Amino acid sequence: MSDLIAYKSNALVEASYKLTLQEQRFLLLCIGRLKSGADAESPKLQKTMTITAAEYFDSFPDMGRKNAEVQLQEAIDRLWDRSIILKDDEKREEFRWIQYRAQYAKGEARAQITFSDAVMPYLTQLQGQFTRVVIKNISRLSRSYSIRIYELLQQFRSTGERIIALDDFRSMLDIEHKYQTYKSLNQQLLRPCIDELNK
Image 1 (cartoon, rainbow, N blue to C red):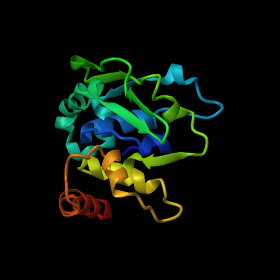
Image 2 (tube, rainbow, N blue to C red):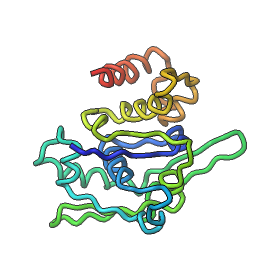
Image 3 (cartoon, helix red, strand yellow):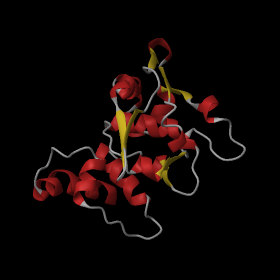
Image 4 (cartoon, rainbow, N blue to C red):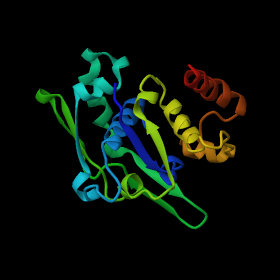
């Protein structure tokens, strides 16, 4: 089981984006391998990352060793199409997670990505406003929204309370056009995620 910890800026945790479970797991594993701080390599030297199917399985054993290679490939298939939207009162910024299409070496069971220049400051140049995600704490989560909610809750772990406006929550999870009523949001997304997080 992985002892990696992924650090993300709070702005990135609260950004609007949608990822599958496998994409989230893959990105968190990559983010957990990044170093920040005074003695760390330059972000430009760290932004290319290679993950093997064995490493992926070790961090997320619930997928089963036989499925690790397939799930690793699924994780990178659409990452190029995934973007992050950061919004505040003055501007809206959109950028990709990765700089180039992810590479998959089938015979070697490994995937390589290069984080985009735009996302790197939100992963490595962290000065006090960041959230810590312990990979082993999310390794058994089976819903992508459970991971996002976990991150949003971790952000306020020290206070033990988090209040998010419903419209902001919908935007963060990129579900503005889904679950139109609170009842459907609660039954189909919140309750199952909360139940999973409480296990």
